[in-house]
Length: 279
Image (cartoon, rainbow, N blue to C red):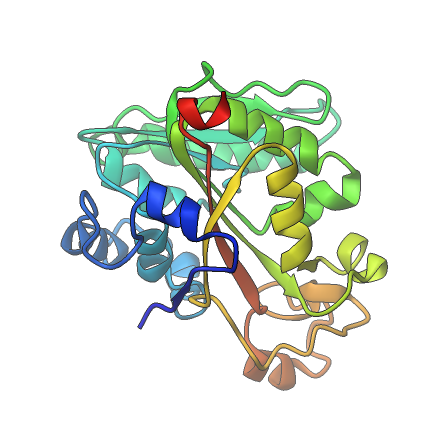
């Protein structure tokens, strides 16, 4: 069962944005569940479902089939792209926001090519996804106030470590419609900020994520424990990548890390205030 928590100080924002509960207006649970069970999905991605809870997560974010939804840095495997893309293909649109390509970055090029090749190979499934590039120096999303929802999964720690988290979040804020939402999932660090784990370990405190989003204008709507994992000790020499699916240490203590599973993750929902709230 999805656990949704309205945080202290967020009640007004939550009430203005509407309750984010199963059965919210516009959310089509049967359609989304059918897509998650679809044969089009990569086996690698399907294996991640028990840890990533896509149905509960997207229900919490209030995803509706007629939304214009941008995913920031979906990755070559396109875990959420292969779910959200078909879900909104008929009535909305999926926007893949990928890292701006550096000609020297062959890995990023392969990742982008892999993702868009899948879209092109199945137009009846994905419709017409849109593409935009995003980098620290050249942030290009879409027309201001044009998106209903932006989602990003396990990326904030990268942006924070590189020092352009506020820059990216400000661009997302600008692209959202008034009342639009940002859904954010990332590896969660407990307690006070730990610079080593934030910059090198892949973890971010929930307080930091909330503070940085609020600093560019977002309101916090709610937090969910849908992607929590209390087995994650969060103190590994190789950071979060010690855990699956990366398993940086290879066969060393593999059984231990497989038993822990994927990281403990915060799941946060933010809202861009309505136009009158910004005056």
